[in-house]
Image (tube, rainbow, N blue to C red; front, side, top):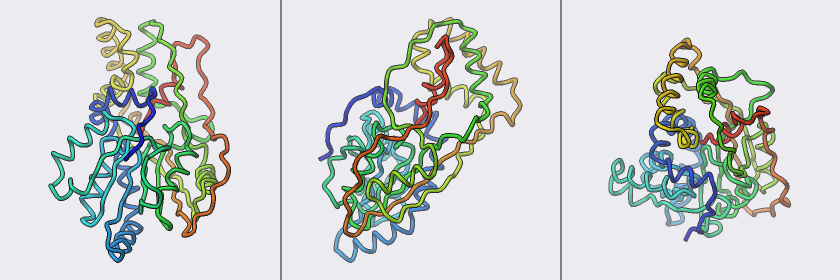
Length: 329
């Protein structure tokens, strides 16, 4: 049985906005998660064959399953595969279960289960998972190294972990024009935004090498990490709808007239941008590791390496760094 997850600001946010997340953000990041699953096709097929020879079903653990797209894709593609979708957010899991009832067959539903637990404390028995995959979650956990050690524990010997998450841009990256346009619309309101709550997260990986080094310190072997990119062309109305979801805490302090003014001004500014300005490219890292056949003891814990915080204006009215950290993904 999975352990009871810790409640923090991140979990509470996903509980509140799970359906908005499904509508506005999940479609943007889902292709990168499906690419991760495709990259795992060979190891999954090998795990299924090995499990069949041992008279059992192979188990794939989807860490931070969210609304469950990766879990559903896996259980559809491999009829002999059992899938466990794990997430700390009860709201996200409720949406995942609902979608499974709508989109999966009875056989597929019987092979997927949903577990509410933290990545750092899954509550699963040791040496029981054949493959663990995670898309856009290991930047959100408080302690990524602890989560990696936990996944090493639950994997069977020779089990595989693969994950994809955000990579901090190298150097000064150009601002995304639609985001700047929305920020300018907020500035026009001249409202004092509340300070963001302290919400400790591991953060984006600072480099591909850092991703590989963390896996090795956790005890994984045959480690590899590569840089990728998430590419998405936003439609103007689509991006504005996403920002109004993403800025839920801001909208909560605005009155009805201010919300209308913000939406109208943001729409006007975004409409003025050229089409090419809505092409979004974000760096990613995809990382892989194997649990040794005879697991070596992981290295002693070290302080997690975090991406440097983005500068915040002296007035503190536009917390762009806090907004970037709320990205899930």
